[in-house]
Image 1: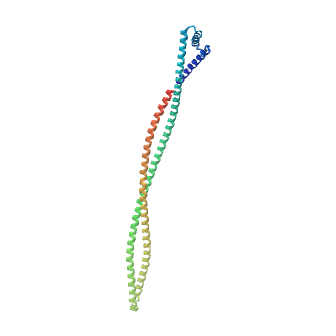
Image 2: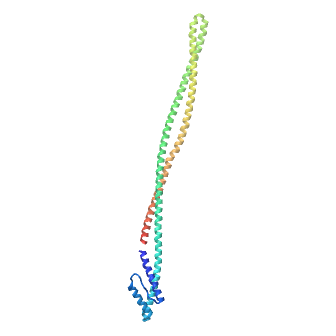
Length: 289
């Protein structure tokens, strides 16, 4: 619409210039585009002006020329305004293009924030699984520690029983020694009793050797059990510390997700405003063009 008006204004400017040149050169105009009626009318006015046959007619022509100059000035101003409008159209189109680019960037940012949120939620689920696994491991190790403590208690009981057996073996050995002495005093009559006493003594000595081996095994078992309990205590302590720290991770990840959701809401709001501005700018550009 504005381009058509500019073309019409330019035609008027050309006509004004052509008329001015004809007056200065005292010549007649020749119009294109089959505008013979206009051409004849203007040439008649020019002839009247050249012949000075009518002062009124001349003055009228001068006034018309003056009016044509004024019209030319208005046309020039109109063209200048048209140029400004065309510049506004170009600026509006550029603004619309920029708004589209901003909208695309905002959409990309929104997509990235959604991806980050999904990954954070996925990580939170994985951490929850790890925390659950550590909790189960913690329970299992505590159970092992309880069993080891039971074993340690049983070892102590076995050691107590072994102490009693050793005392009995020592006492039996002492009695066998006394029996051997008495059998020796009895001579031939005590020979059979002496054999029995020697067998009892040998059994007592064997019992002492077995008890010694049992003591060694009990000592080793006690040491191993004690060491195992210490190790389980260390593992339990580390699992507790690790579990407490891991318990903070899901909470932190959920906080991150909430922040991302808040940012996503703001981004969506900005995107909505940007789309409205883009639509408004596009309509304005279409109206101006």
